[in-house]
Image 1 (cartoon, rainbow, N blue to C red):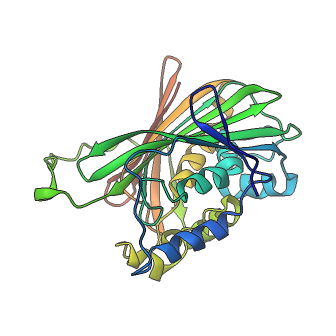
Image 2 (image 1 turned 90 degrees about the vertical axis):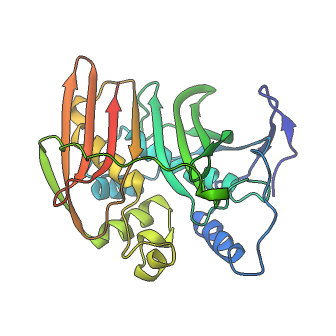
Amino acid sequence: MTAPGRTGPEGRVRIDLPRMPAAGALYRRALLGALPGTGRRRGRDVPEVELAVTGVTVDPAHLADYDRVCGFRLADRLPATYVHVLGFPLALRLMTLAEFPIPLTGVVHVANRITVHRPVEAGETLDFRTYAENLRPHERGRQLDVVLVGSVDGEEVWRGVSTYLGKERTAGGGPRRERGDRPTPPASSAQWRVTPRVGIDYARVSGDHNPIHTSRLGARLFGFPRPIAHGMWSKARCLAALESRLPAAYTVDVAFKLPVPLPSTVAFSATATGETWDFALHDARSGGPQLVGAVR
């Protein structure tokens, strides 16, 4: 099913897959592995392996569907977050490896950084590779970075770094941050009603079928009273609001704060400082911060 592994320039064993994995099957495997009595011993560090897939093409109908779900204009230029969707099943396959140190079920996506080196057009063919790095302690467990790189004809054109938190019990519960007064949210430039369809529609176009986004029962199993929006939908929706102001090459960082319940209303704000755009999402009713980000 895979090409023989070979050592890459960074010392990792590279494994070339014949095709992009099916995300749905990977989620089913992860959920079955989380059942009582089926647990397995996790690795103590990130696996020294890099997965790769070549020859990934864009389905124009899928791109148009994604653009509609996330609020982008219909165009042949790929949104930065759409490239993440194209390569996400490969990163998901990495996270379901037996030696991956954090189980996929219950993992929390806490931050995401995307660098667009140049615009990517729908007619281009992409090669992807992914690996994990920087496993480190966190006050609530451990976190690490999953790196996904997109290239065209050997040239890196896109890079994404997703930071994931695996919650763990620690002796004494670990240090707790003091909760200070919540700052007043900035004035919003728009409000968006986020319906339950957002979770279902984004799961369809992204392949991210984590039940916390699509099922009330699934959400409750992981401690949420009702489904929550995908973090990458929230990031994409913010970028769609800034679409006409984005340069050809940029980096966009976001930190995911509080979840966006489905349904709810969110307030979007954005301010420009020099060549940087700072933006945020807040709960329109409580003012609670849900996402903070910057384009530079």
